Length: 349
Image (cartoon, rainbow, N blue to C red; front, top):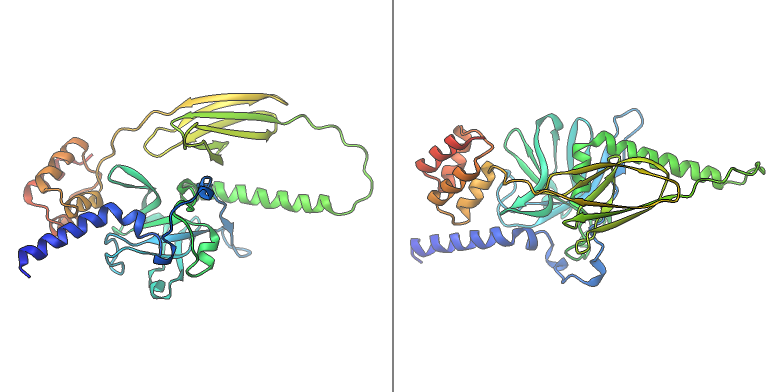
């Protein structure tokens, strides 16, 4: 086989891999099944667990699939696939522990939150992937899908594409760990209080009737938007109609925030009276294109985009990294030339 044919084959495989990695490599071979009508509501937010020991800082635990497609760590070779385990998040650390498969146990890690430089939804070729992407100061990037707990607990468990939980739930834990911990503690306190109330008690004087609960109907453009009340996630508006109905809300004032990748957050304050049924309409404004990361540049080159075309795109959108010895080596290794490096040096935003 000639060197020219081998080089062409590698380029074709890399291009195809970049376009299909997110959708095909996430699922183990035994789990690649077509989606069914039963997954219509699968993008639920999910609830992490509080697993802190007494006397230690609160820690959140999320069931996840750790995606290892494109090279991003010395121990993660290109070839796709995922391992499954738990991501632990506290004020000081991010720790990942693999449960299965056994061959990927070495993918576990513990890193300092202080070294985290970026956390957001992984954007592949300008589109969201429903995966969280965490970048660290030393150049390491980790990507996770937020999974149902049964997938992590049962080695080889079958599941359908679309069953992964909303990525916003995982990102909220990283970006607002104290807020999520406070919500979970409040829920635990509420359950404990409910258990006490359910226990047999002596007859009490007749309680004063409580005010009727209120209803808030949120309508968003576009649909599929995450809705928060006072920074507590309440669910997502439907993808088609863009609606979410929140019932049984106590009367009072609330801060409403709507969030969606590639759109500016929409916020408003509403005051609900007892028994009120209020409709709130919101239209989110799209964000402008973000600057390229060094991984974006490497992905473009490996995907078959010429250095000249890459330089043109970078001149239009800019980059968010500094050109140094390390980043220059990464770009040259992917096929970049001196003209592309010059464009990057001028385009830093």
